[in-house]
Image (cartoon, rainbow, N blue to C red; front, top):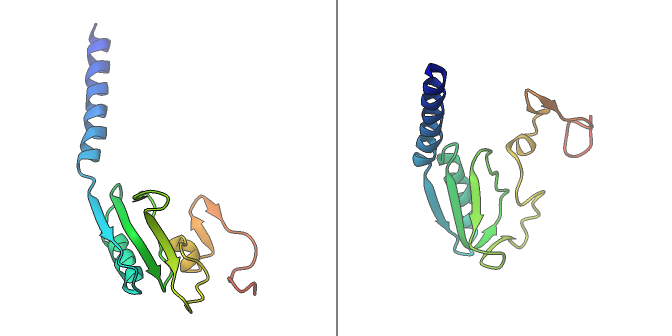
Length: 125
C-alpha cells in the first residue's frame, strides 16, 4: 500500500510541474504593418521572449532582414492567408527565416550533432 501512495504522490507532483510550467509561459502578440520596420519588430520580440513562450504574428510582415526564430518557443500566425512574411523589394535576403546556428554561421547546431560540408554559406572551406 505504501508503494501505491508514493506512486500517486510522485505522479501528482509531476503533473503539478508540467501544469506549473505551462502557467508561466507568456503569449506575445506582434502586429506587422507591412513596412520595413517589421523585421526589427519581429527579431526584437523573439530576442525578448523566453523558452516555452508563444508568439502570435498578425498581418503582413515586410522583411528587409532575416528573422531568426529561437528554439523551444511557439510561433503562430492568424491563418495561411492572414499572416504573410514577405521579402521587401530590393532586400536580396539569403533567407526570410533561418536558425540561429545558420544565421551566425556556426559550424555546429548543438552538442549532439554537427554540420557537414562547407563551413561557409558561400561554399568556401
